[in-house]
Figure 1 (cartoon, helix red, strand yellow):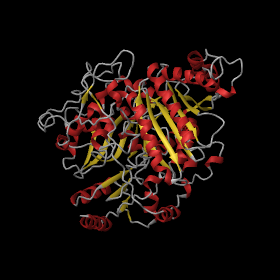
Figure 2 (cartoon, rainbow, N blue to C red):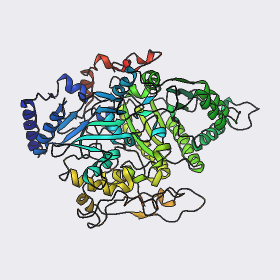
Figure 3 (tube, rainbow, N blue to C red):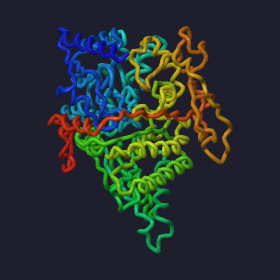
Figure 4 (cartoon, rainbow, N blue to C red):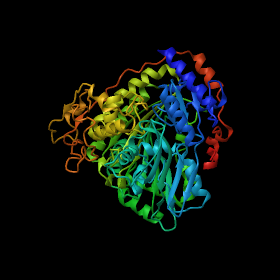
Length: 639
């Protein structure tokens, strides 16, 4: 079988190379191949596709898809390469890298921006900067080096999601090359009961690698409410005082006061114009504090209004490690500036650590897992308590080593939560924090222990996620099985997504580990769903949520058959699509992670060393000196 697959790959490579339109095709050992497959995450250092293709036109993409499908050679789409779970890398078939298709054009008359599928958000923001379009926002990502395609097709959480909705909520039009090689344009105005309307719905949250290759997006430009076109933004890293730093006058333990402050902060109902992301950081090299919390602020309004809001919400507690201390620093370390200056410099600097980690100049091992949290106080208290305990355990277990544990809370909700869960394939709109764990380390012998640590950490936090399972596809968890992943990322939207898959990719050509399955595939999966039971009033989390069991959303063949009418609201009608106090929706089942063992190839250090020593990052993207720069901008990242 392997020999036949290799022969098919070689045939497709020969055909693409011979194509009269000059499709760029690169093989192992060639510079562009090595640059494309290089990865900042050492877990994926040995992923080597048969070839890398870098199309320059939609016609190129159509030819690649047709030739590959005709010979059943799999395609893996790359439009930025930021997939936390390595889903933009592959060991088999073709890596379709869209980096040459990165043009961005703003049309002020129609109030739209058109972005090719391989563009990064830095390309988009640079157009706003170059045209001095203060006050206008493209509803894109926080990190300028993130790909437009993966971001929007997963739903898209940006710095102004709370003001304008998810990134996919501001999409007007999507151009996609489907499994039959045809170019199809779908729009937000398409009839949702017809095939194109269904496809548009599915691409808004579940479009990554499931239905075809998206080659172009058209989005609506957004206008800030601030009349002078400015944004209030800033960054503050808090190293709370430890208990041993307290004085006799300190009545309460200082870390308890810090925890009370953070709990109140997360439980606060902020206006839609406010977005404050936070990251809890436990660096094994840091010994002066138990942990640190980094705050990133975005506010669509005036500095005066922001300062008043922060003081009103947080400033009453003047004790050490209290809200007053946090309020003082958040007002001190934020400033108002034109939106173009914000996009060019501040946004780059706010996410500088993540940007540097995304480039393979200094690769490390990384693992991720994500959750979707509501912000009722009792739930928040349990979550933050677990995080603090796990960070203490991390420091104790890996003392003397080099590593990082980070828990990032991406502030969401706001306008994004105004729509029903079934309004798009992205389902978890009503979550207030899309939260992910990141583990980062350098010594490869630590991998087994890090995986075990993350699994235990996840098992403790998972019950507090919406539905006791919800996670965000743009922060994927690599160990989820296919059936579990669908329900984890899409909830009750899964059934309708499978029907869209059947309509547009009936042969399941675009398939990957956590991709949308065909209905008939789901029918073969045994159902082990467990219904929720009544929850005690004492706890916001049901007892069943702490049990581990598998669950498949597959129903009877009749309920998933081709003849059934497609109804986007069928699984999320308003009367039952709301969260109960226990975090569940009537009629849904609870699911565990259903983790499957991860089989790692036993490859030698010599192979890894050879790969990384021969890789050279393009000079324009060199990040070697970024750490010493005082102010960073888009130009420092090569835009």
